[in-house]
Image (cartoon, rainbow, N blue to C red):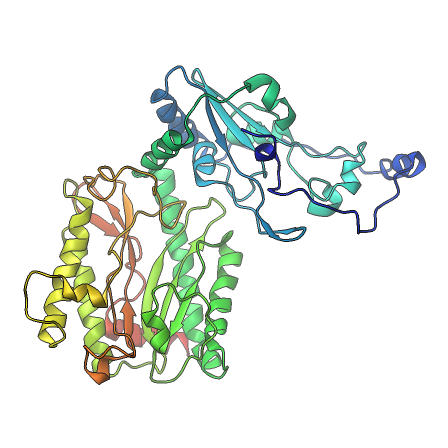
Length: 455
């Protein structure tokens, strides 16, 4: 690990062209005095602390005799000397329980069954960094926790980041191997994680309802998708840390673009709005929900036909979820419905074994979900796509149909219609639980939801 990898920012901040505070002794003495006594009460242990300790033990057991180093990561540069809102690496947050309040540049070391968390402690008021350092000075970024406070919160020993090199020395572990193990560790969620996932879904449900209430306002603006995005993102900041990923607010033909995040188009009466969004809590667990709703409040006949086909595919996939099946079987069940419906509608060539129906749904039906919206991404294929479902696994079921506005293989009345329905599922001992079942799913329920939200 290089020195730069231990920094709190990924690039050095250059303040040569900015005004600076005085640096003489008189000012230093003056600004360090006459402050009220700081009350540094130690917090109670975080609810995740015990779970995080068990996770660390599980990882350590796979690397006996090795030193594990898990970095929170540095702040990412947005432009010049400004940075994106900080978010710790998911593996670090998972193994410490430290979520949105994680300190940039922090490092967790696990060795011989013991753990130490290193981070850059706050600058004391007797230090010029207190007022002059925009990276860690409290005048700039507010109060920061002490080593003792974080140790009490997370129930793990802490040390100053400056001690990391002297105490740890060279790193002996392959980073890719550690990434794989920490990804696979997250495939099965513990009780704390499952509660956080449900809370993230519940907050997201509230955000969706607020979007429906704002549809008339969105329809009145030439860039109404920005209204949709803004309304949902406001709820994300009120109830959580932020959004779990860039909100997709895709109206009309934009719904046929799978990752439409420009969100700069109109929201027109008569069109469908595809909203794919999720709230990330302060714990960094995120929901990932999609609902497709008629802007006018009522589906047209063709819109309802497409919507019901997607709903049928989602229900067919969820119906087979239980411990013991392979993860990819969920996708297969959904695609069976997608093929049947598009063939019934006369959209497919003669059946020769080619999956022509994938033209209208090129993405997968499911992905694991947790701290990352596409969680456990470094897991081996045999553990993920070909993996056997176990109780506690959380993933999405999100089939869709997307008929591009210029696709001549589909009848004209279908062109420009995009529908996706996405729910967050947890595998149980006997089947599965839909964490987002409380968010209306059927066409009739969606229409009633819109009406009630706009009263």
